[in-house]
Image (cartoon, rainbow, N blue to C red; front, side, top):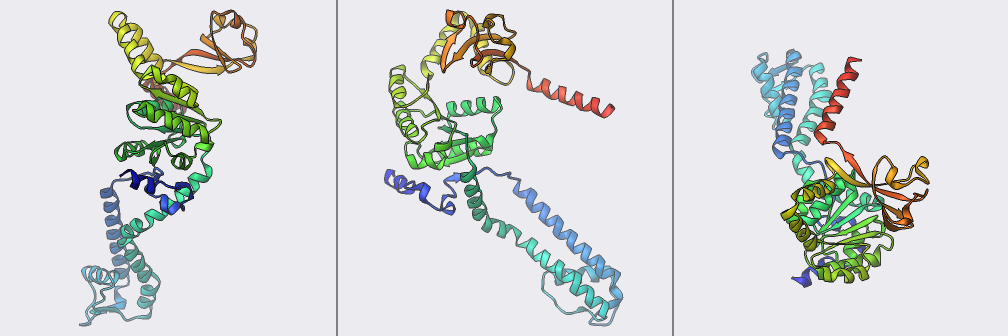
Length: 370
Protein backbone atom coordinates (compact mmCIF):
# COMPACT_ATOMS: atom_id res chain seq x y z
CA UNK A 1 0.00 0.00 0.00
CA UNK A 2 2.78 2.43 0.95
CA UNK A 3 4.57 1.58 -2.28
CA UNK A 4 1.50 2.38 -4.35
CA UNK A 5 1.00 5.71 -2.56
CA UNK A 6 4.66 6.58 -3.02
CA UNK A 7 4.42 5.82 -6.72
CA UNK A 8 1.21 7.82 -7.06
CA UNK A 9 2.59 11.02 -5.51
CA UNK A 10 6.11 10.84 -6.87
CA UNK A 11 7.10 14.00 -8.72
CA UNK A 12 3.59 15.47 -8.54
CA UNK A 13 4.77 18.93 -9.47
CA UNK A 14 6.30 17.58 -12.67
CA UNK A 15 3.04 16.05 -13.86
CA UNK A 16 0.84 17.83 -16.42
CA UNK A 17 -2.26 19.52 -14.99
CA UNK A 18 -4.51 16.94 -16.67
CA UNK A 19 -2.86 14.18 -14.59
CA UNK A 20 -3.53 16.05 -11.33
CA UNK A 21 -7.31 15.81 -11.66
CA UNK A 22 -8.45 13.76 -8.65
CA UNK A 23 -5.39 14.74 -6.58
CA UNK A 24 -5.84 18.53 -6.55
CA UNK A 25 -9.49 19.55 -6.44
CA UNK A 26 -10.76 23.07 -7.08
CA UNK A 27 -14.24 23.71 -5.63
CA UNK A 28 -17.07 24.39 -8.07
CA UNK A 29 -20.65 25.52 -7.70
CA UNK A 30 -22.58 22.29 -7.77
CA UNK A 31 -26.33 22.09 -8.46
CA UNK A 32 -28.75 19.22 -7.95
CA UNK A 33 -28.67 16.62 -10.78
CA UNK A 34 -32.45 16.41 -10.74
CA UNK A 35 -32.68 20.16 -11.09
CA UNK A 36 -30.33 20.10 -14.08
CA UNK A 37 -32.28 17.26 -15.73
CA UNK A 38 -35.63 18.98 -15.10
CA UNK A 39 -34.28 22.19 -16.61
CA UNK A 40 -33.13 20.35 -19.75
CA UNK A 41 -36.51 18.60 -20.12
CA UNK A 42 -38.36 21.91 -19.75
CA UNK A 43 -36.17 23.54 -22.41
CA UNK A 44 -36.69 20.58 -24.77
CA UNK A 45 -40.48 20.74 -24.37
CA UNK A 46 -40.41 24.51 -24.93
CA UNK A 47 -38.40 24.05 -28.14
CA UNK A 48 -40.90 21.48 -29.42
CA UNK A 49 -43.92 23.72 -28.80
CA UNK A 50 -42.23 26.83 -30.22
CA UNK A 51 -41.33 24.92 -33.38
CA UNK A 52 -44.84 23.49 -33.60
CA UNK A 53 -46.24 27.01 -33.30
CA UNK A 54 -44.03 28.19 -36.18
CA UNK A 55 -45.28 25.36 -38.41
CA UNK A 56 -48.90 26.01 -37.33
CA UNK A 57 -48.64 29.67 -38.39
CA UNK A 58 -47.46 28.53 -41.83
CA UNK A 59 -49.64 25.40 -42.02
CA UNK A 60 -50.88 26.31 -45.52
CA UNK A 61 -47.42 25.52 -46.82
CA UNK A 62 -47.52 21.93 -45.53
CA UNK A 63 -49.42 18.86 -46.65
CA UNK A 64 -49.56 15.32 -45.44
CA UNK A 65 -49.32 12.36 -47.81
CA UNK A 66 -53.11 12.49 -48.27
CA UNK A 67 -53.19 16.19 -49.19
CA UNK A 68 -55.03 17.31 -46.04
CA UNK A 69 -54.43 20.56 -44.18
CA UNK A 70 -52.60 20.24 -40.89
CA UNK A 71 -54.14 20.48 -37.45
CA UNK A 72 -52.06 21.62 -34.47
CA UNK A 73 -51.66 17.98 -33.46
CA UNK A 74 -50.28 17.27 -36.96
CA UNK A 75 -47.84 20.18 -36.55
CA UNK A 76 -46.75 18.85 -33.15
CA UNK A 77 -46.28 15.37 -34.65
CA UNK A 78 -44.28 16.75 -37.59
CA UNK A 79 -41.96 18.76 -35.29
CA UNK A 80 -41.41 15.76 -33.00
CA UNK A 81 -40.27 13.47 -35.82
CA UNK A 82 -38.35 16.31 -37.48
CA UNK A 83 -36.36 17.46 -34.44
CA UNK A 84 -35.53 13.88 -33.53
CA UNK A 85 -34.28 13.40 -37.16
CA UNK A 86 -36.67 10.46 -37.59
CA UNK A 87 -38.33 12.04 -40.65
CA UNK A 88 -41.08 9.65 -41.81
CA UNK A 89 -41.94 11.90 -44.77
CA UNK A 90 -45.71 11.68 -44.27
CA UNK A 91 -45.81 15.48 -43.71
CA UNK A 92 -43.58 17.79 -45.74
CA UNK A 93 -43.33 21.48 -46.73
CA UNK A 94 -44.23 22.05 -50.38
CA UNK A 95 -44.32 25.88 -50.79
CA UNK A 96 -41.08 27.88 -51.16
CA UNK A 97 -41.86 29.93 -48.04
CA UNK A 98 -42.42 26.84 -45.89
CA UNK A 99 -39.18 25.30 -47.14
CA UNK A 100 -37.28 28.52 -46.46
CA UNK A 101 -38.63 28.63 -42.88
CA UNK A 102 -37.65 24.99 -42.52
CA UNK A 103 -34.09 25.77 -43.58
CA UNK A 104 -33.64 28.97 -41.56
CA UNK A 105 -35.61 28.10 -38.41
CA UNK A 106 -36.48 24.43 -38.04
CA UNK A 107 -33.04 23.11 -38.98
CA UNK A 108 -31.17 25.29 -36.40
CA UNK A 109 -33.75 24.25 -33.79
CA UNK A 110 -33.15 20.63 -34.74
CA UNK A 111 -29.39 21.06 -34.15
CA UNK A 112 -30.05 22.83 -30.84
CA UNK A 113 -32.42 20.05 -29.78
CA UNK A 114 -29.80 17.39 -30.48
CA UNK A 115 -27.15 19.33 -28.55
CA UNK A 116 -29.59 19.61 -25.66
CA UNK A 117 -30.18 15.86 -25.63
CA UNK A 118 -26.49 14.99 -25.55
CA UNK A 119 -25.55 17.91 -23.29
CA UNK A 120 -25.24 15.78 -20.18
CA UNK A 121 -22.88 13.36 -21.93
CA UNK A 122 -20.78 16.24 -23.26
CA UNK A 123 -20.62 17.77 -19.78
CA UNK A 124 -19.28 14.53 -18.34
CA UNK A 125 -16.69 14.20 -21.10
CA UNK A 126 -15.46 17.79 -20.70
CA UNK A 127 -15.47 17.87 -16.88
CA UNK A 128 -11.94 16.49 -16.65
CA UNK A 129 -10.64 19.09 -19.10
CA UNK A 130 -12.36 21.90 -17.18
CA UNK A 131 -10.83 20.69 -13.92
CA UNK A 132 -7.39 20.57 -15.54
CA UNK A 133 -7.83 24.17 -16.76
CA UNK A 134 -8.91 25.30 -13.28
CA UNK A 135 -5.89 23.57 -11.72
CA UNK A 136 -3.59 25.31 -14.20
CA UNK A 137 -5.05 28.76 -13.43
CA UNK A 138 -4.99 28.13 -9.67
CA UNK A 139 -1.36 27.00 -9.60
CA UNK A 140 -0.32 30.12 -11.48
CA UNK A 141 -2.21 32.58 -9.26
CA UNK A 142 -2.11 31.10 -5.75
CA UNK A 143 -0.22 33.40 -3.37
CA UNK A 144 -0.34 34.32 0.36
CA UNK A 145 -2.74 31.50 1.20
CA UNK A 146 -3.05 29.25 4.23
CA UNK A 147 -2.40 25.50 4.11
CA UNK A 148 -4.17 23.32 6.67
CA UNK A 149 -2.61 19.87 7.04
CA UNK A 150 -5.18 17.48 8.46
CA UNK A 151 -8.94 18.07 8.36
CA UNK A 152 -9.98 16.30 11.52
CA UNK A 153 -11.51 18.01 14.55
CA UNK A 154 -8.54 20.36 15.03
CA UNK A 155 -8.20 21.16 11.34
CA UNK A 156 -11.90 21.95 10.94
CA UNK A 157 -11.85 24.18 14.01
CA UNK A 158 -8.82 26.01 12.61
CA UNK A 159 -10.59 26.56 9.29
CA UNK A 160 -13.71 27.81 11.10
CA UNK A 161 -11.56 30.29 13.02
CA UNK A 162 -9.92 31.52 9.80
CA UNK A 163 -13.28 31.97 8.09
CA UNK A 164 -14.65 33.69 11.19
CA UNK A 165 -11.77 36.18 11.05
CA UNK A 166 -12.69 37.10 7.49
CA UNK A 167 -10.55 34.74 5.40
CA UNK A 168 -11.99 33.65 2.06
CA UNK A 169 -12.45 29.90 1.39
CA UNK A 170 -10.40 30.34 -1.79
CA UNK A 171 -7.42 31.34 0.37
CA UNK A 172 -7.38 28.03 2.27
CA UNK A 173 -5.94 24.73 1.01
CA UNK A 174 -6.61 21.49 2.89
CA UNK A 175 -4.21 18.53 2.70
CA UNK A 176 -5.25 15.10 3.95
CA UNK A 177 -4.92 11.42 3.13
CA UNK A 178 -8.56 10.62 3.93
CA UNK A 179 -10.98 11.00 1.03
CA UNK A 180 -13.95 11.47 3.36
CA UNK A 181 -12.30 14.40 5.13
CA UNK A 182 -11.42 16.01 1.81
CA UNK A 183 -15.02 15.61 0.68
CA UNK A 184 -16.18 17.59 3.72
CA UNK A 185 -13.60 20.28 2.95
CA UNK A 186 -14.67 20.45 -0.71
CA UNK A 187 -18.30 20.91 0.31
CA UNK A 188 -17.17 23.86 2.42
CA UNK A 189 -15.71 25.45 -0.74
CA UNK A 190 -12.05 24.77 0.07
CA UNK A 191 -9.30 23.71 -2.32
CA UNK A 192 -8.20 20.18 -1.42
CA UNK A 193 -5.11 18.07 -2.10
CA UNK A 194 -5.12 14.32 -1.54
CA UNK A 195 -1.74 13.19 -0.24
CA UNK A 196 0.69 13.06 2.66
CA UNK A 197 2.16 16.42 3.68
CA UNK A 198 5.36 14.67 4.79
CA UNK A 199 6.27 14.59 1.07
CA UNK A 200 7.75 17.76 -0.40
CA UNK A 201 6.01 17.20 -3.75
CA UNK A 202 2.60 17.30 -2.10
CA UNK A 203 3.40 20.54 -0.26
CA UNK A 204 4.79 22.11 -3.43
CA UNK A 205 1.58 21.12 -5.21
CA UNK A 206 -0.27 23.10 -2.51
CA UNK A 207 1.90 26.13 -3.28
CA UNK A 208 3.70 25.98 0.08
CA UNK A 209 6.59 28.01 -1.34
CA UNK A 210 4.16 30.94 -1.75
CA UNK A 211 2.04 30.33 1.37
CA UNK A 212 1.51 32.92 4.08
CA UNK A 213 0.96 30.36 6.83
CA UNK A 214 0.83 26.60 7.36
CA UNK A 215 -1.28 24.94 10.05
CA UNK A 216 -0.30 21.39 11.03
CA UNK A 217 -3.23 19.64 12.73
CA UNK A 218 -2.49 15.94 12.32
CA UNK A 219 -3.22 13.28 14.96
CA UNK A 220 0.35 12.04 15.60
CA UNK A 221 3.20 14.08 17.04
CA UNK A 222 5.85 12.25 15.02
CA UNK A 223 3.93 13.08 11.84
CA UNK A 224 3.71 16.71 12.98
CA UNK A 225 7.50 16.84 13.30
CA UNK A 226 8.03 15.39 9.80
CA UNK A 227 5.47 17.73 8.23
CA UNK A 228 7.04 20.73 9.97
CA UNK A 229 10.54 19.80 8.77
CA UNK A 230 9.33 19.39 5.20
CA UNK A 231 7.26 22.58 5.29
CA UNK A 232 10.08 24.71 6.71
CA UNK A 233 12.46 23.45 4.04
CA UNK A 234 10.08 24.58 1.30
CA UNK A 235 8.44 27.63 2.90
CA UNK A 236 11.25 29.67 4.38
CA UNK A 237 9.11 32.70 5.24
CA UNK A 238 5.74 31.12 6.02
CA UNK A 239 4.42 31.13 9.57
CA UNK A 240 4.07 27.53 10.73
CA UNK A 241 1.66 26.72 13.54
CA UNK A 242 1.62 23.16 14.88
CA UNK A 243 -0.66 21.26 17.26
CA UNK A 244 0.89 18.48 19.36
CA UNK A 245 -0.70 16.10 21.81
CA UNK A 246 2.12 15.93 24.36
CA UNK A 247 4.05 18.87 25.84
CA UNK A 248 7.32 16.88 25.82
CA UNK A 249 7.32 17.06 22.00
CA UNK A 250 7.07 20.85 21.90
CA UNK A 251 10.83 21.42 21.67
CA UNK A 252 11.13 18.90 18.81
CA UNK A 253 8.51 20.72 16.78
CA UNK A 254 10.10 24.10 17.48
CA UNK A 255 13.52 22.78 16.46
CA UNK A 256 11.89 21.52 13.25
CA UNK A 257 10.91 25.07 12.36
CA UNK A 258 7.53 25.78 13.98
CA UNK A 259 6.80 29.39 14.94
CA UNK A 260 3.99 28.52 17.33
CA UNK A 261 3.08 25.29 19.10
CA UNK A 262 -0.25 24.46 20.72
CA UNK A 263 -0.42 21.55 23.17
CA UNK A 264 -3.95 20.25 22.66
CA UNK A 265 -4.12 17.73 25.51
CA UNK A 266 -2.73 20.05 28.20
CA UNK A 267 -4.85 22.98 27.05
CA UNK A 268 -8.00 20.86 27.26
CA UNK A 269 -6.89 19.52 30.64
CA UNK A 270 -6.37 23.00 32.07
CA UNK A 271 -9.82 24.08 30.89
CA UNK A 272 -11.35 20.99 32.47
CA UNK A 273 -9.63 21.74 35.77
CA UNK A 274 -10.69 25.39 35.73
CA UNK A 275 -14.27 24.44 34.88
CA UNK A 276 -14.66 22.45 38.09
CA UNK A 277 -14.14 25.55 40.23
CA UNK A 278 -14.87 28.56 38.02
CA UNK A 279 -16.90 27.49 34.98
CA UNK A 280 -17.62 31.11 34.04
CA UNK A 281 -13.89 31.61 33.35
CA UNK A 282 -14.06 28.81 30.81
CA UNK A 283 -17.09 30.47 29.21
CA UNK A 284 -15.13 33.70 28.80
CA UNK A 285 -12.16 31.83 27.32
CA UNK A 286 -14.48 30.06 24.86
CA UNK A 287 -16.02 33.43 24.02
CA UNK A 288 -12.60 34.91 23.28
CA UNK A 289 -11.76 31.94 21.06
CA UNK A 290 -15.04 32.14 19.11
CA UNK A 291 -14.97 34.94 16.52
CA UNK A 292 -18.67 34.83 15.58
CA UNK A 293 -20.06 36.81 18.54
CA UNK A 294 -19.25 38.28 21.94
CA UNK A 295 -15.57 39.10 22.46
CA UNK A 296 -12.50 38.17 20.44
CA UNK A 297 -8.77 38.73 20.74
CA UNK A 298 -7.45 40.74 17.80
CA UNK A 299 -4.30 42.55 16.74
CA UNK A 300 -4.00 46.03 15.28
CA UNK A 301 -1.51 48.80 14.60
CA UNK A 302 -0.99 51.74 16.91
CA UNK A 303 -2.91 54.87 15.90
CA UNK A 304 -0.85 58.10 15.55
CA UNK A 305 -2.66 59.77 18.46
CA UNK A 306 -1.89 56.77 20.70
CA UNK A 307 1.91 56.97 20.34
CA UNK A 308 3.54 57.73 23.69
CA UNK A 309 0.46 56.86 25.71
CA UNK A 310 0.08 54.05 28.20
CA UNK A 311 -1.57 50.90 26.84
CA UNK A 312 -3.70 50.82 30.01
CA UNK A 313 -5.35 54.14 29.15
CA UNK A 314 -6.40 53.36 25.58
CA UNK A 315 -10.03 52.97 24.56
CA UNK A 316 -9.51 49.24 23.89
CA UNK A 317 -8.63 46.65 26.51
CA UNK A 318 -4.99 45.95 25.59
CA UNK A 319 -3.53 42.63 26.74
CA UNK A 320 -0.03 42.80 25.25
CA UNK A 321 2.22 44.70 22.89
CA UNK A 322 4.23 43.15 20.04
CA UNK A 323 7.49 45.08 19.57
CA UNK A 324 10.17 43.94 17.11
CA UNK A 325 8.53 40.53 16.97
CA UNK A 326 8.65 40.10 20.77
CA UNK A 327 5.49 39.73 22.86
CA UNK A 328 5.42 41.93 25.98
CA UNK A 329 2.50 41.78 28.36
CA UNK A 330 0.89 44.92 29.70
CA UNK A 331 2.20 45.72 33.20
CA UNK A 332 5.91 45.34 32.46
CA UNK A 333 8.13 48.42 32.45
CA UNK A 334 9.05 47.89 28.76
CA UNK A 335 5.54 48.84 27.66
CA UNK A 336 4.81 51.85 29.86
CA UNK A 337 4.33 53.73 26.58
CA UNK A 338 3.46 52.44 23.11
CA UNK A 339 5.66 53.23 20.12
CA UNK A 340 4.76 53.91 16.50
CA UNK A 341 5.81 50.51 15.16
CA UNK A 342 4.14 48.48 17.90
CA UNK A 343 1.17 46.20 17.38
CA UNK A 344 -1.50 45.85 20.05
CA UNK A 345 -3.21 42.66 21.15
CA UNK A 346 -6.59 43.76 22.43
CA UNK A 347 -10.12 42.54 23.17
CA UNK A 348 -12.65 43.65 20.60
CA UNK A 349 -16.40 43.40 20.61
CA UNK A 350 -17.91 41.18 17.90
CA UNK A 351 -21.60 41.79 17.05
CA UNK A 352 -23.76 38.65 16.64
CA UNK A 353 -24.26 37.57 13.05
CA UNK A 354 -28.03 37.68 13.37
CA UNK A 355 -27.86 41.22 14.71
CA UNK A 356 -25.65 42.19 11.79
CA UNK A 357 -28.16 40.74 9.36
CA UNK A 358 -31.00 42.63 11.05
CA UNK A 359 -28.98 45.84 10.89
CA UNK A 360 -28.34 45.28 7.18
CA UNK A 361 -32.02 44.65 6.58
CA UNK A 362 -32.98 47.79 8.50
CA UNK A 363 -30.47 49.83 6.50
CA UNK A 364 -31.93 48.47 3.28
CA UNK A 365 -35.46 49.37 4.42
CA UNK A 366 -34.36 52.91 5.27
CA UNK A 367 -32.69 53.25 1.87
CA UNK A 368 -35.90 52.12 0.15
CA UNK A 369 -37.95 54.63 2.15
CA UNK A 370 -35.51 57.41 1.19
